Length: 576
Image 1 (spheres, rainbow, N blue to C red):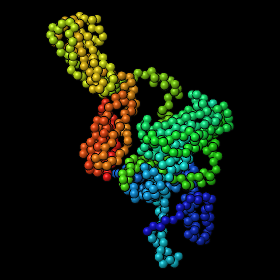
Image 2 (cartoon, rainbow, N blue to C red):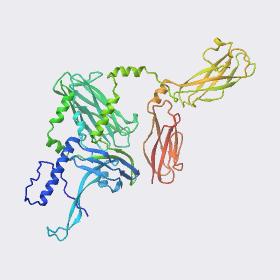
Image 3 (cartoon, rainbow, N blue to C red):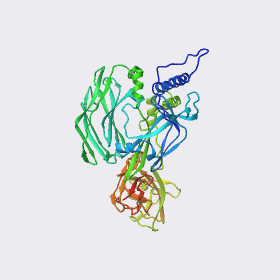
Image 4 (spheres, one colour):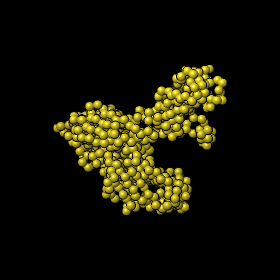
């Protein structure tokens, strides 16, 4: 049985043993020796390396109620090393803090945290102490995992705190809104003002509010009021969003440009239904005349060591955010986001790799403009996804008279659905191809006109041939080239996605619900629905899903008709 002992968080002042001949060494001397070495190392860890994940510790989902934490190492906020020597698998409900985290939070997510722990082990007989029982002769440095719904402080990422300021202006069980600004800017310079949004509910969130600017204006219209608007219905629901605005600092020095929320303008709604909430907060940016890098450098070193260490003592080490799906009395794991607040320790090897990658990305001659010009002038090669070609044969009646019309069979061009351009050429007897007006080469080829009729809903076309003079051939061969239109190509270059609204569903047996497939960056937005397994209910072409009689968890899939590789799915929990 291992007893828990008090954790050491006081690292200094330092005292070490002064040995001399004939010195009687006691337990206190040996403990002081260990404490001196540990505290020195931990202080160096904390101030030189920081705190966070050093390697590994990836959290993965084993099943709907079980997670696994891979082996790895981290430094806590007092510089103590936390080593997970081998992967650990746990039921979520068996992790400390499970019940309290669910009862005090929004029930839609919890945070998995890692904590340093140590305890006594190794049974020994205390001969000198005269104890009847015994004692322990080892201290095992260990760790513990626990769940919490407590959100971190704004300055949890100490590295980012040197060059940016993060202020939470609104937070409840459904959404959190932060304003992020740079620490320093120069007069009349343009800087980025970010609104970071984290939604914690499956409802669609929308809000708007005004920000009053002092010693700063919006870049485009020089206004002292910045209006922030967000509607989750107009984007893919992914839980984290960033709105970027460009502001211009005033013509001042050694003062602060401020951005203060106007609470009276705050409008909040969930699924288009108005909700109550109070928003407040003020961000400030130091407007300086000197070099910004020097200011950041000095501000980082001006911090008092005691205040730096004290401020970090209570900070948690967040390994993962675990999104939950509540299905009646059962809580299921829906998604896991590792190290949600970027608490990483950037070691020397990682720093070297980042610097090396930066060097490789720079032009060899130091001229970024020349490199950009060359890239812009370089011809681009169309991929097989942009161009397809082939030859089709159109049968003619031998001895066809002038102005006779013939058609090919339906031809699948292979570029999917949507708009494409079809180019046609007449294949000659010597395997050449004539494009344009055939009259120019009337001595070599049959005199015909060519046309193509595209069906964008099928991804196919038909070739039409009209004779302009008597043709003696039984057939002609037509070479066709299909080119995806520019807008289609641009859409295809962007990341094509499908998202399903709602993104999760809990139904009773035989209950029905309409689902919506939102196709992003696709001209053709037709989606085909299916259910996995097939016994998991029925869904029609309009997205009307009917749950099966049998309880369980089923997958509903929406697949793009134009781009079969693009698909999305949601889990449907069927339960009485």
